[in-house]
Image (cartoon, rainbow, N blue to C red; front, side, top):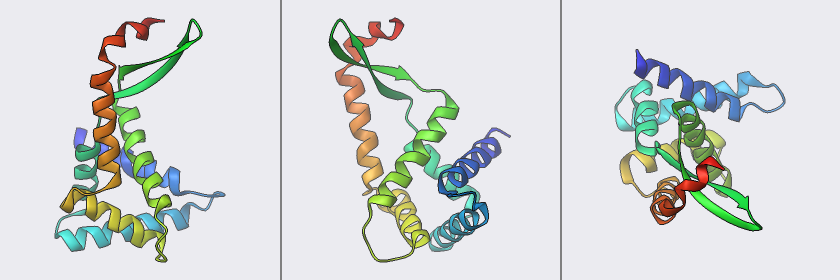
Length: 147
């Protein structure tokens, strides 16, 4: 039950990010094409692709900043499930939009999915590792969470 909830939540979040000017039908078409291409390439189901994406990019900590006594302090904060899903989708789509190849958006999206799931050589994974290393770096500042 919980896996289906995560799947549905991620799918809806992707649609929300892809929808421009109320054109949800086009966003659904792009997302479905990308997921189906990825699922065919990996010989798995679409449900499995979305679940694996979430599990690989899922981060339990994020870095926030706080201005306190004219200084900016960074500190790690635990992330709830809804926010984790949001961060996964946001990071994937940021990297896909930075991609300057002359191919369709659904191709870019499916290539990014494949890079994340098969090759572990994605920019999104690098960003996640960087976030985790910053969390370790700033863990001495956790007392700023209550300010």
